[in-house]
Image 1 (cartoon, protein in one colour):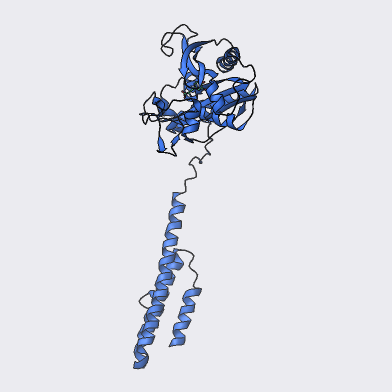
Image 2: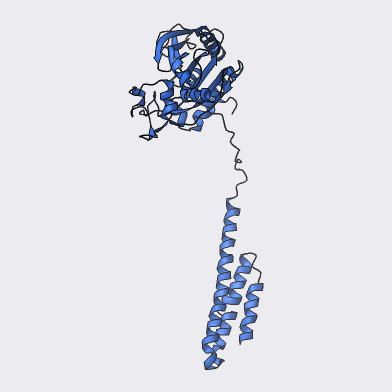
Amino acid sequence: MKDLILNVQNEIAAFAITDNQSLEAFRIYFLGSKGKTKELFGELKSVPNEQKKEVGQQLNELRKTAEDKFELFKESLASSQEDANSLDLSRPGDSDEIGARHPLSLVRSEIIEIFSRIGYTVSEGPEIEDDWHNFSALNFPPEHPARDMQDTFFIEKGENEMALRTHTSSVQVRVMENSTPPIRTISPGRVYRNEAISARAHCFFHQVEGLYIDKNVSFADLKQTLLYFAQELFGDKAQIRMRPSYFPFTEPSAEVDVSCTICNSKGCNVCKYSGWLEILGCGMVDPNVLEACGIDSKVYSGFAFGMGIERIAQLKYKVNDLRLYSENDVRFLKQFTPGI
Ligand code: DAH
């Protein structure tokens, strides 16, 4: 009896099921009402009583093996059938999506390119800053409102105060601490401020900081550098104007407007009918800042400037809602790369 069971076991293993017909033949041969397992079960009565239990178990296992193989092939034949039915040769193929550069990256690269043509290097700094690099070395008095919780995302308060940088001016401190003049560098990067998100404000945005330190650097150099920049970015006809302003780290300080490129200074709703658009802040580096960063303010002078990349992109691409830049909507992002 044991030999018979073993033979059938081998037969089950050897039986090739390739399609629905052979599957049905398998079922009839091994599991049908006149099939092999039934036949063997029928012979159980001739087995001596003391072996009945053991042989019975072996027969149950045999039936289970046959059933398992039947189910396995039934399922796989059914799913391959499905695949074959769902194959639609007229369907258009999946195309590979070609990505586009983010508008802020495009503007950032253009700014870097313009300044690299007049000898500026690119330097970067950490987005998590200590109080020294973000505020103290830049001549912010201890009670300055920019240090307030309203503007700054603090990560750690107290003695080892750490915060997300609120501007890229922190990088000028790092550069001055680690190099000797002449220094000519720009620092693009992300900055953070604790602001409610709206079309005109965001809790993170991007800036480019500029720094030039050498002997005899004057305000005239600053003005000419920014005029060059504005004309490279907005075209030969672009003009700039400077308005007196205040920043703790520059003295004197100014805000710079560029002539409205949208209406050619005739007046439109973007420039609010003034003919001018504000694009950056700048000034001569305050001697206190030079000294704090280990540079002799009696020998060296310099200028600094800082601009928002979103602001420039807004003027170049006429995108007025800041939120669009971080929503990752491909329909928006694709518009800035022609031909895709
Ligand atoms: N750090 C300033 C801001 O975030 C921008 C700025 C103004 C940077 C004047 C400068 C500068 O380097 O000289 O608003």
